[in-house]
Every structure is written in C-alpha cells, then in structure tokens.
Image 1 (cartoon, rainbow, N blue to C red):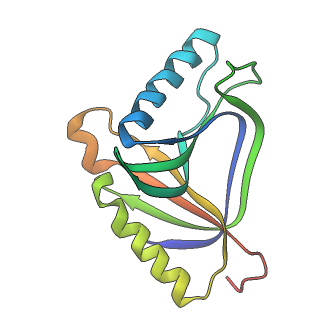
Image 2 (image 1 turned 180 degrees about the vertical axis):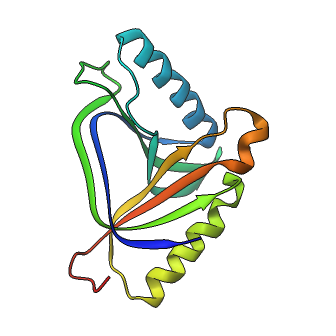
Length: 158
C-alpha cells in the first residue's frame, strides 16, 4: 500500500445522500440511488464515493453516519431525500490505495492512521472512500480497488 500526499478529489454534479445507517441500509440506499438515476434519465459520471463521518454501536449493530456521493453527467432536480451538490473538492489530501478484498480495508485504514500519527498530520475532513474498481461478480471481490482520501490542514508539512 502506498500513501500519496497533496492529492485532490474533485467531483461535479453530485447526488448526495446523508444519513445514519447500518451496512444493510447503506446497501439498500445504494440500490435506491441506482433506481433514481435511471428514473430521472441521467448517468453516473465517475466512481461511487462514500464519506464516513462516524461509526457508533446501536441496537442494530454498527450505525454509520455516512454520505453516499454519486457524480452525474449533468445538473438535475433530485427527489427530496437527496441533495444536489454542484461540486465537491477535497484538497491537500492524503490518498491510500487499497487493492483487494474490502474486508481487509481496515488494515489499509490502520496503516493510513499510523502514517498520520507518525507524521503529525492534522486531518480536517471525513474519510472519503472512492470505489475505483468494483466487484461485478463475487469472484471479482479480491480485485477491488478503493482509494481512501483524507483532507489535511494545508499548513501541515506534507
């Protein structure tokens, strides 16, 4: 795993869903988003991204405060449960690339956290997980690629 400094994550015409959800609820919401995109006649214009703000233990297990972000090919009016964002830009970011089964993603995140502590980096954003290469079939799960971005204070010496 390689960590790169001073990276940028830029998305335009973004459909956004923010909520506190379980893993299953997040999967269900992603399916709904796919249906909404089809129904309103737009196309996905880049990789699906999730931003994780916090994770808590709840009565249903882990509950995540997440934002699901989907770049679209044009500006659109969205149903009330979604927000349209013209642009999302994360600058001065650290980027770690995870290649392999997403079940091992915590190892990559732990290595990134070790880097942050070792280099005294001040993180100022949520964790953005960009699905660069998704698993189309179950056999593909070990070939997935996820880029992890963390925006940092530009005064940091990274």
